[in-house]
Amino acid sequence: APTDLLALGEVLFSSGDEAGIRRWKMERSRKGELKVRELDSIGTGGVVTRMTVSPDGLFVAAACDDGKLRVYEARKARLISELEIRPEVRDLVWVDPLQEGPLLPMWSDQGQEMPEDIRPPALRKGKQKN
Image 1 (cartoon, rainbow, N blue to C red):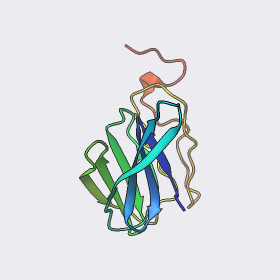
Image 2 (image 1 turned 45 degrees about the vertical axis):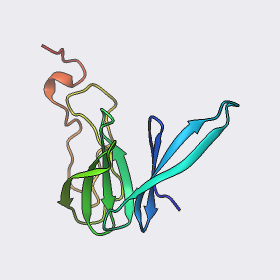
Image 3 (image 1 turned 60 degrees about the vertical axis):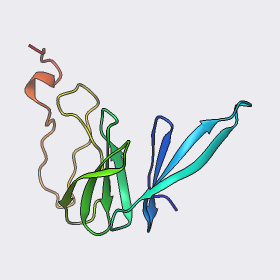
Image 4 (image 1 turned 180 degrees about the horizontal axis):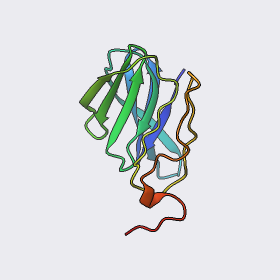
């Protein structure tokens, strides 16, 4: 069963398969029915447990059960970067810290103190951009 689903335009990405990330093409028929056909699979070297997309929609980040975070070019499914991470990722969010937006909750499994707001001072509430 998929652990994550991402839609970028007409392409759907699904994770949780041993083959890696599966890419699907979504199209509407002339009658308005949605048709979905599999394009390919992106071999990831591990089962993808979590995925997210970059704010600009150009990249997909995938956390795998082998302890790696891999970043792929979304359009061509080409591996861009790979990073070792431990322990296994339970959630994955790609944010642009320079853009205004909702604050993400801060937490830690180890109970460590976490800053209330990690955005740059210019983007915090009550501050004006220069």
